[in-house]
Length: 169
Image (cartoon, rainbow, N blue to C red; front, side, top):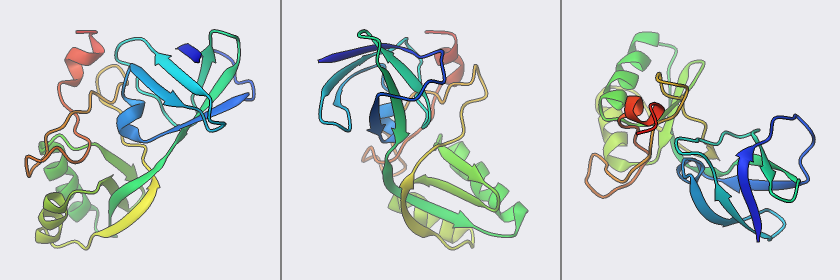
């Protein structure tokens, strides 16, 4: 099993690739498989959040590139910046991880959140795409993801207590 313990400082071309959804890219300890099928163990510093394009250094010296895996998302698009800001406010108030793009927001698929956004007057489209939510305001971390959602069934990425995470607590 390949052991991966740190981010690579170089921009060297990866020897191997690791594709993970956002929820797993927030884990510091993880047993997984590389794209080539090789088993790998992640042992990253507490508070690490992997992003698509990151490079990791394995104990054997190989460079492993990180890819954001496609996942079930909801997308809200509008030319009305105030309407999008209103949706972003309500999603943030629920600690939802949100990807910001010009004229649109993306977040993990959740029927309760979909109904909330539709109730705010904007259409919601389902997408299957890589998810790169906004990183947190404290220390550049995305915060930890945990299983509570608006419907109590643990669906969708949530961001919570970012200041404690950035402080290493």
